[in-house]
Image (cartoon, rainbow, N blue to C red):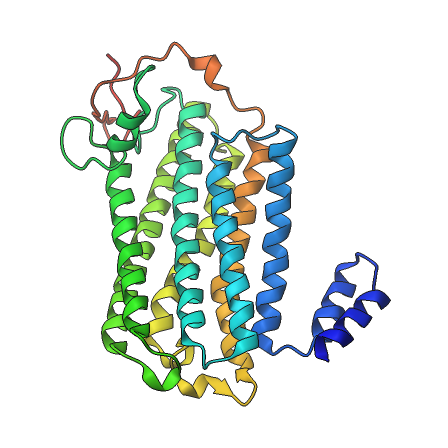
Length: 345
């Protein structure tokens, strides 16, 4: 009957005003967790349709950094849908809960990767060397399979810093997934937890690796800003870099929350004191969505905004004659700072 009343409210509020949408959500009879999940499900759906529209109108290409953002948004949609289901079904279905926070970790994993891809793309298009010390470009004609293998190669002349980051992110992601699997282990409800201490340790370790990659990203952004100022001979760097810098605190806060969630009781889904008669207590839901979901959504939006500041960047065709090295070497100026990130042949 609650959903029937919601449909009647929908007929009443046919206006597309966001205030009417919010009023509709509050009349659905859902608990706080389900309402919050539904709000961000709608917000991520908006980003998803914006990206789809950009692809359909050929403003974006499939082989672009924005496809990584699209993948992230898709993962977050699945996460929010699972969160909504958990809010409706309740704590007795532990598998929904585990699926929810595993998908949430996947969302953070893909978002950190997105931020690195956007920074690398900016370096390639805008630095004087038209290359990136994080991931130097391959020579034209290099087979796709070799590019893929090199993106994970830790040893040899073609190793790249991004290969280390890729491997660490994958290791962290695997640890979190295995930790989630340990919690369920055949459990059907909240009274059948298994291996909870081990799962907590694995989740914490995985989230700590994610956070460390976010901290290293700050160094990469800062170094690129300094290099941009030097090349532009200006006090100001390219605006895209400032947007990436603005997105970083969101990634950092999300990473800190990822560590707090399994270790601090007031942030832990598996602490019974965080539940009331109608599901999760309001304070828990508010802290989760402020420190977690909203930070990811804001960072994702900021990365998408770089489309505006990057429209006049040089195209690949403008620097097609750049020569690429067979191996990564790093040039530094007298102060020891990375100057170009590569050595030309």
